[in-house]
Image 1 (spheres, each protein chain N blue to C red):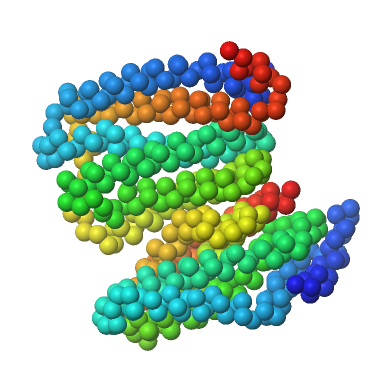
Image 2: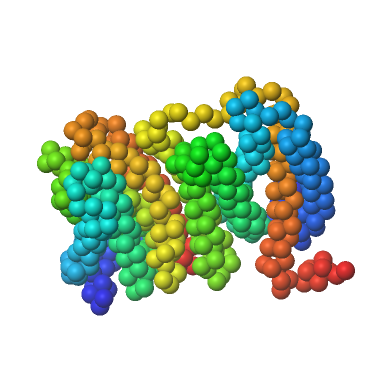
Length: 249
Length: 245
């Protein structure tokens, strides 16, 4: 974690500019972009942590044929639910890491004190989190779908619905992760806080996937997923920023 | 002067006194209404032409389900007031409400599943109302879990307040998504009691029970609120005066 201090160096022009509201060195958006780039770079230095949620997703998907039946005719109707439950759990597993390292080494505190909008910085962190977990999960989901008997033509639908749905999951999760920042062994509590709020995403996502597997138009549930993602985008970073400030006090 | 009553609510000794004075005024009417509603519902109301006497559990089920949402809303509003005006007493109201609301939710789930056995032939149906009620129970448990995870009361107050506000935004979304999900997966063969077709002898006891449960919540809230205030202000000097027999 020694490198994280060096990595926050690009933000330094932003620090101390609070006294100079007329001409901040870095705009809110530029600061957010720096945070995004920093988080991506840090994540790629620990590749094993990137792979873990994906491996978890694969294992959870494997449990169902083993636990239910190897027959594809039995598994096919279960495929949307299995893919979505596994994606939900994998994204939840990765959430614990969203703020933890930055909270422990004081980076979050620096963000809060930087005079930049904490909301934007956390939105950038959440965007990085989605790029690192949600997007790979979306690209991997069709594999799980095919393994569970989904036809090849359903691929695009599965990728798009998981990609849009995980945006909402990352955003909702960022609130839970921010609320449980100061709590040790927060895993179970984080799931208890986050999963009930994730239920609409699960319902619309599984429905879109089900329609895609059936070869039907999945536009309606996909748009509802998009609506959830947009609602999350407008409100979740605000709530997460409030929660982070509470936990830093 | 219009706002003095509001500002005085921020004073723990004042709230402690007022809550103590109001409790019997809520508790006795609540007891009377609930007894009257039970007599009306369990004896005086006629049996349903389809469900016989089985429907009578509605007199506990419907008020509990109503209270589970009412308490959650109250809790979220109190938490929001606490966050915005930094009012400790509002946080105490939210903290005191959560276990009461969770109990009502649990009661609604148990009575709903008991009602399901004679009506549906099974204790549990993935029916939209039961499912949203179950999710509501998880929301309550999450709120209480988050609150208990902090040692510092103020931090617990404010973190759980954020969660309550986020939750109350989500409750309608969750409810309608569950209704939508259910309408796809379940044939609409289940019949509910048609509310408008209920005769007055059936719905008057129900209204009495609703009002009685609401007042009962008020009374329990005030008793619990006094406990919360006492434990939060345990080092304050006014406590010695207040609890002297």
